[in-house]
Image (tube, rainbow, N blue to C red; front, side):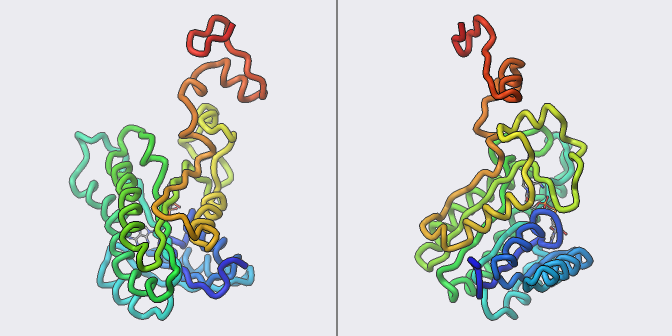
Length: 275
Ligand SMILES: NC(=O)c1ccc[n+]([C@@H]2O[C@H](COP(=O)([O-])OP(=O)(O)OC[C@H]3O[C@@H](n4cnc5c(N)ncnc54)[C@H](O)[C@@H]3O)[C@@H](O)[C@H]2O)c1
């Protein structure tokens, strides 16, 4: 077990990717402390971890509320790993129609919460040094879709604060990294989400969408001692999506090649010089 005897706080661990991370860390022997607003799902996740032989507890807490965070973290005696997973896309709104309150809410949930959690967790993490923090960013920090300005900007800022804190906290033995997932299938979601389709699957060279466990495995690696010399880095968990040129998706010959495993370029291809 890679995390035996270590205590990890996972924000937003009641469901979705956070739940996947909580389950994976518990499998590796960590004492998992889940904080979330969703008490019902949070307690269910704790029960599930217990049924699998792991150890976890739930605390109802708003990660945008500094008083609650300070009080709760002040009651904890040990912390080795902090996973800042809470995030929200916000309403999909074109920038010229976006309300300031909606912009601020996304920034609060995705960025300010991360700052507040780090601010109050760092004194504890210092005592456990070597310790680590893993933040959840998104492919939306790299490749944009319309009407998500606040989300994309907040996730870009997560990359920046990750590097900032990595430099700032290295001298006290705390590593700070992030992961950037693409669309992720969550626990209990078996069918493609409404927004996904055959064409969007072609955007992933590995030919499938990511699962919460794919993300959890990457977070586990970055949090564990196996990544002892890695800090200030972002790990894309996207099946190769951001590595692929758009022409590989749009050109019929390349898409067909991807599906069959044989790439036959169109005759007289000006881009690739195929003849
Ligand atoms: N799901 C995806 O496809 C995807 C892709 C890329 C990145 N991400 C990122 O991964 C992270 C997890 O995403 P998800 O889709 O699993 O989210 P989700 O909406 O399924 O779960 C988020 C959890 O956070 C909790 N939460 C929300 N606001 C909170 C607050 N103020 N205080 C405490 N808890 C709060 C919710 O109750 C919920 O349990 C987010 O940062 C998200 O931006 C998700």
